[in-house]
Amino acid sequence: MKKMGLNISLLFLVATIQNVSFANLKYDPNDLDQFNKTNQCIGCDLSNSTLSGNHSKAILQKSNLTSSVIFNTFSQSDFSYVNGSHGSWSSTNFSYTNFSNATLNATKFTSADLEFSDFSNAVVISADFSQADLYGAKITSDQLATAASVCNAILPDGSKGQCP
Image (cartoon, rainbow, N blue to C red; front, side, top):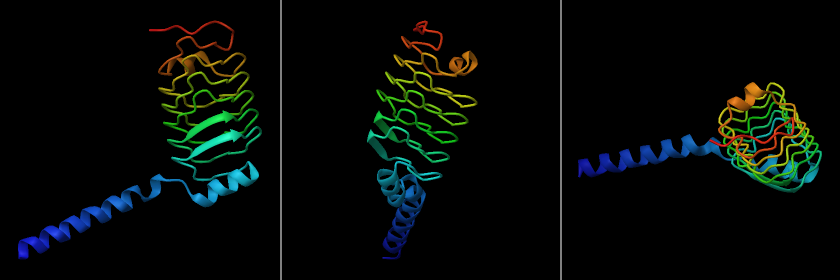
């Protein structure tokens, strides 16, 4: 009987630790509501959220967008200083968007429109720019060299990205 009580206590402890560990891995519903109502949310927690629709000129400076899914239109938006690592932002219109000083490690930009976007001082290690349109974007060759792929992307100078 004592052993069964110990097993139940151990199971309860493990369940509690898991709940605490994963408690901060989801977005704040109030932040998501604010963004959807105002098209801006500075310093918000939108991690693991899905943002879609026409959000041209959105302001998301300094927000946590880790593991988020973003699609449709976010042209002329401000994503400066965001953490968007591990995001899935493929096939989205980000033309003229400010990504300066953002952390975008392993973010998927596959087939995204990134024309004339600003990636100054952004970290794009292992980001996927396959088939993305980066024409006129402010992103260095050193930054692109850290990306997972630029296969068939239109690069800032209009040339086509090499495939492995």
